[in-house]
Structures are given as structure tokens and as C-alpha cells.
Image (cartoon, rainbow, N blue to C red; front, side, top):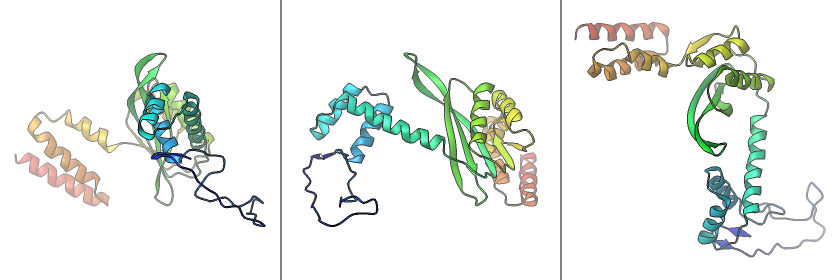
Amino acid sequence: MNTRVGQLELRVPQTRGYRDENDRPFYPKALDRGVRSERAMIFAMAEMYVQGISTRKVTAVVEELCGLEVTSNQVSRTAAELDEQLNAWRNRPIGEITYLVLDARYEKLRHDGAVRSCALLTAIGIGPDGKRSVLGCSVKLSEAEPHWRKFLESLLKRGMHGLRLVVSDDHSGLRAARQATLAGVPWQRCQFHTIRNAMAHVTKVAMRSEIARDLCRVFDADEPAEAERRYDLSELRLRTH
């Protein structure tokens, strides 16, 4: 077996009269049938490939570190296995989601032979049990309305239902897609963008960090009455400056 520390020769004992639940002869559970490489090493090769390292350089790194010869076809097959797992994760059923958090971040990706800044659309759901999970993600060239709408429609097709609130920024593309696919679901602007936009109205730069901390304390309040009390205290203190 090919491992991170080199090639190991394993001897699997033979047993007579033993069959597992699938009517197969004995085989160690620590090993995968038909797999000749350690899973950790396979994931390491796939990660290098995903990060944009060429198959030729990946084979050179594995040979230098582990003393093993790995072909470019093996690296490509390893990356293809990751693609299959990712597709299965992307298409898994969702079920009931109470709160939906939508956001996007930009990453540098190679597209059509050039490095471009692309939008990674992300959906995080909070179920009735209060547990948070990533529902899905999609890489697009921008946050335009068609991209967000297609992404939200894919979540609905996977069975997402029971939404009580959507939280996101107020990007025009996302806003239009949300209104088209999740009409009737209440929306709230995310706290981060609310605070960041509020800073634009603070004329004294030296006061921005203090006001941002006060707004965070307001948002962290457990009850509306406590949030109002914290807001009033902050307003009174700022007026006395």
C-alpha cells in the first residue's frame, strides 16, 4: 500500500468458513477493498490539484516526499472522486429549514485560461432543532440576479421548506432573486452589513470603533426590551461626548 511514509507491504490473513453480512470473505475494516493507496495521501493529492497545482507537479511532490511514482492519470482520478463526493453533497435532500442565511465572497479562480475574481454563493440553514449547517454553495462569475435565482431554486428543488426568516445583505441581484423565489418570507439585513453601513454616517473616525461595539451589544441582547435599553444608554453616552 502506498502511504505518506512510503510503500508498505501488508499481509492479510486468510480465513475459512467466515463470511460477512455481504457474503464476502474476511477483510480488515481498516483497509478499503481494491484501494492501494492510503486515503490521507489520496486527499493530499486531490487538495494539491484543487489548489491549482498541475498534475505533473503533484506527481513530483509525492515522489519527493514519499518516494512513490504516481502518474498524472492517478491524480486526475483522485480529483474526479472528490468531484463525485461534492456533487452528492450538493444534491442531498434538505428538508425543513427555519432560518436561511445567504452570503457571497469572492475568490480568485482560473476561468477560460485567465485568473478571474468569481463569486462563491453560500447558503447556511438553521433547522427547527437550532443546528446550523451549510446547505449549498455555487461558484458564479458575479452576484447577478440570474445566478442567485438559479441557486435559490436549486435549494427549493432539494426540498427546502418551512422558512420563517431570510438574512442577507441588500445586494441588488440577491434582492431581486429573493423576491422572485422566496416571496412572502420575511427578510432581515445581516448585522455585519448594517453596522458597516452605519459607520458611513459617523463623521468622527475616532468614534467609529466605539459605536460599532455598542451596536454589537444591541444586537447581542436576548430580548427586545434589553436591546432598546442598551441602545438608549449608548445614545445618551454619545450625546454627552
